[in-house]
Length: 458
Image 1 (cartoon, one colour):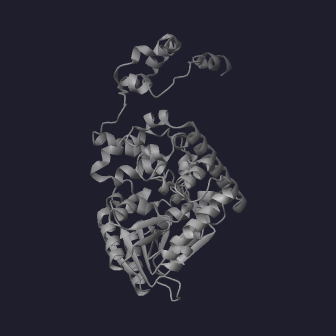
Image 2 (tube, one colour):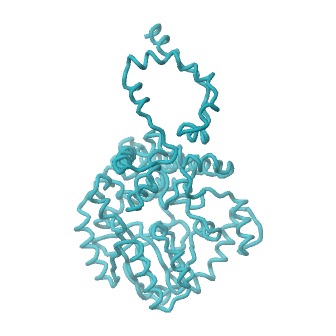
Image 3 (tube, rainbow, N blue to C red):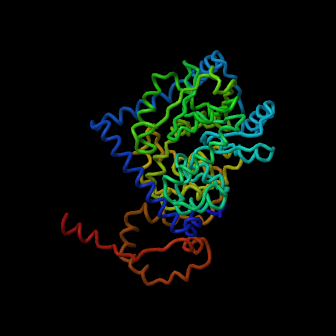
């Protein structure tokens, strides 16, 4: 199922998963709106913050990165650069092996998902245990995250309780509080036995030489309490000038992601700790993995993303099919643009994703970084066409384009629309239209009277 075109995935998806996705996504969107309205009753205040976030991310990234390296190294952090996923994984494994580490705990990181770090470490004899509850849930069942903030958004509590029982974490108990406590007990031993902690970074502060981690479970602090080595990895676009600009992002991140005024924990990590219960050594790996090419392209705005997931929560397509349908690490409107670009030579593998969009504009309305996602998605459609990518179940719309752009032909054809209700769809079993109809149900045509109404009523 993972390699199916997104429309086929939609037809096969479990109804329970659809229900879980819709409930969680709609709930997050409503919570976001209420939270922002409560914090900023003035209609233009939120817009001003979003514009500020966009402007900050538009600053000279090269200068900020250069200053960040100097500040980080001044704080005793060893800074490395990785041109791609393979180099980043090798660097991490080399550090882990040099410490004779066997047990690794991980703080939630989409960047490590991007480079598929867990599988790589496991193949090289290193256990890497996710400590975020959502990530733990999908890890034990060998799944990928279906959302960048809520990785287990497609799972319900009875399903999670069954997984915990199956993998020996706890007896079956679907009470949410008990699920959380059971995970907590299970992970406590992992924290104590960890040799290395690996994290991402929500932001990297250039002036202060620190990384910022925003979490709701306290797992980042627990992870750093026992491990002696901390490895952080982040795309270089996560660098911002200073803590002053950070305030703009923190005012938007929690509210946009989960509808809360602030994440429960916001950790500033500026090197290895001085106390007994903290890492003695810290590394930060800046990952490129195609970002330099994106920065130099017409799609540079996508690197301003805060990874809040608001665009996914709002997207009607994501609510229906979920993140796994996008077949890549980054789903939803973000993934439609970012996934083909990160794929590099495998661009065509994700060339169908731009079609998984109704261009309703909802994603742009909620994006805290004010990224023009619908415009980028249209550009991505053009890019796929320019590269002559073949898209499964695609249909040639040249005939429709001629009809739709000719007012005379359009008016001539409107009265015949009702005939569509009498044409058996079985006639189209073969060919592109037949494949397209296998995964879609067409409603009865009920229109055709607007022009008469308008002529009478004006």
